[in-house]
Length: 128
Length: 128
DNA sequence: ATTTGTGCAAATCGTTTGCATCTGA
DNA sequence: TCAGATGCAAACGATTTGCACAAAT
Image (cartoon, rainbow over all chains, first blue to last red; front, side, top):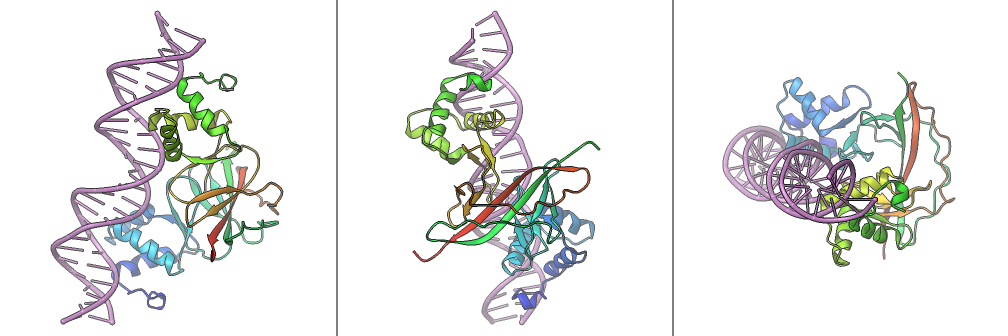
């Protein structure tokens, strides 16, 4: 899989790929991935985590999710879909496919082409 | 205007408000506002810029725009609208009202309510 | 052997905070 | 007068970078 993406299958990359792609679609930040790796006794430095996440993204294995907040999230679901974002606890959730329809897409200004349309449905918690 | 928003009309706030609201709708970051203030010989510290932007936002005079990148943008247009985001140069542009239609809005998960739907149409530059 | 990846620590960027000083009502 | 605002510099969190060392082809 890594080889196919043009990446050398090193210990760290294989370990991180295992964590990322083991359990279906996930949204993960560099920090939380680092934490998970530590728990599973996979020693990886934060710098390598960042490198790997970006390389995976370039290789099309991951997708960067731009929601709010200062953190960057990576999504293992690279298909077309949109996101809920829980404002109270900075959580990203996939919107089930087909539930979200983007209506009319606007004409891009001259000289520009649309590269992607991202919809973020912001949520706030209501009475528990 | 400031008084109406419950904010003391201090020199700095008045100067910043003048810059922000003088020329129609704008998208501005703390840095660029600071730069503009400097050019217009309005000495304001960055800390005050941040304070002011957040106070204006709370007062409903500005709206925070969550696009990509690590910077936070503030929008003087507080009405319902969406944004283009030029990936090449981190520029935010309003999508003319009525050109963007959000289709079906998904059901929020139980326990949550939708606070806002944000659409970002990402643009890339094509041959000049 | 050569190229590429890794780890560490220091550096950077945007933003926030603590605190002493000033200012508007 | 005196709560509230400002400025500075130091603190901060997330991310990046430089460089010596290690591992993959």
